[in-house]
Image 1 (tube, rainbow, N blue to C red):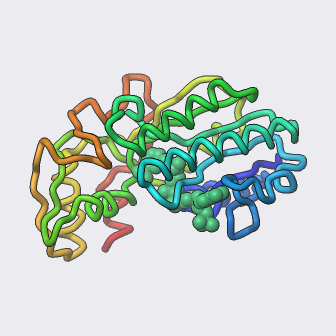
Image 2: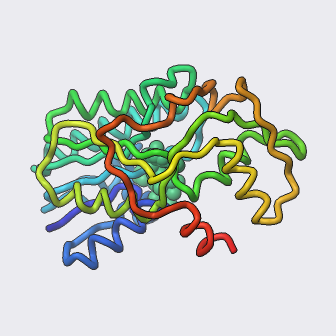
Length: 249
Ligand SMILES: NC(=O)c1ccc[n+]([C@@H]2O[C@H](COP(=O)([O-])OP(=O)(O)OC[C@H]3O[C@@H](n4cnc5c(N)ncnc54)[C@H](OP(=O)(O)O)[C@@H]3O)[C@@H](O)[C@H]2O)c1
């Protein structure tokens, strides 16, 4: 089956392409570097020729409110139009658990806009909402750093390994469209500040992590329900401890 992965060179995209290839499918990794640009439409028609499924795991290069909204809206419109013209039968989008609970954040408003276009669009779809990737904890700390201090909310998070996200997407991509949203989360919950403190400490990073209930997460204040999944979420197998011992040390 030909499956086009938009953002196929990124963290999730490259793992997904590898898994699909191993499973005997014909994945095409599409990104600006390979001449396929979802924002301008360049190269889309050619890339989608003969494709049955498109998985959109692209991410915006700039996250200021206007740029990120424009990215997800324009790219989604271009993709849905090109996929319709090419006769694609299933559009899969990767989104974030809690997206609709964080309207103070420009990034999450843009993800809601992306989801809405997919739901209202002409194609059968599946939206996979994932929690934070273990690999993303360092970037969360970076985004909340002032001087040598990282101010983070102590809200609960239930993160997962990027590998597990890619496996779920590979599964969803070859299944029937659900025309619905599914959630994916890791096997354990943590306090965000504690997890970041641990990652920095074990990476010999000298920054101090301070818990602050008002610290903003990409523009939004968090509580224990903001980023955690509902009861029906699929649970990814890899525990943080096992991932961490293999990745960071
Ligand atoms: N970070 C998290 O914890 C988290 C949690 C849940 C869901 N998500 C979602 O997961 C998705 C993927 O995240 P990621 O961390 O894997 O992203 P990433 O590593 O930053 O990769 C982004 C990909 O998007 C591509 N891209 C950028 N501009 C493009 C364009 N105009 N047209 C086509 N492709 C373009 C990039 O291509 P180049 O390499 O050529 O630039 C790259 O392949 C995002 O939608 C994000 O919202 C993230």
